Length: 186
Image (cartoon, rainbow, N blue to C red; front, side, top):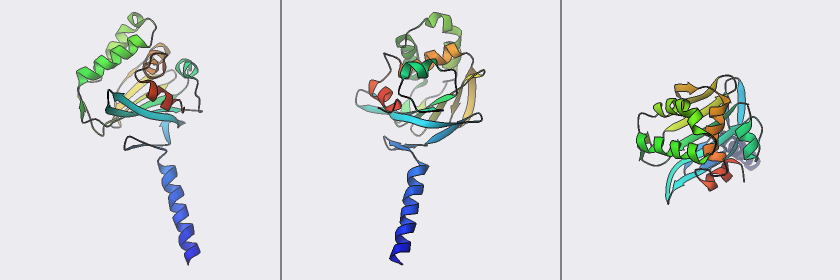
C-alpha cells in the first residue's frame, strides 16, 4: 500500500511540474503555446521590474530553444512573447510610452516603422491590470498578432516590425537586462 501511494504521489508531482514550466513572480507561465499550427516551447522567462516594482512576468516561446538574441530577433519563424501582469495597474499611456522607449532603444530606423508602431500602440486603449495576459505572437506572412486575455485585438504585418518589437526585450539595450537573460534561458 505504501508503494502504491508513493507511485501515485510521484505521478501527481510529475503532472504538476509538466503543467506549468515557470513560476515567475507568483504567476505560472505554461511550458508551451500554440502559434497557428506550430507548438512553441518556453525558451525562458523573467520579471520586468521598474525600480523595485514587479510589473510583469515575461516569457519567450520559440520553435526550438536558443540563447542567441540576434538570431531570435532576425528569425522569420513563429514565436511569442507573453506578458503576465503582476502590478495592480499600468495605464495605457505608460504602456505606450514604454513601448516607444523600447522601440527607440532597440535601434534601427523607427521613422520607417512609424505607421506600424502607431497601429500597435492603438491596441493599448485600457490599463493593464494585475492578472492580465498579453500575447505578442509572430507568424511569418501574417505579422505580429496582439491578444489580451485570449482576445485578439489586432495584427501588425511585416518581419521588420517583428524585429523591432522583439528587440524591445532582446536587443543590446533591452527594457530590462535581467528579463532578457531570463527569456534567453540564462
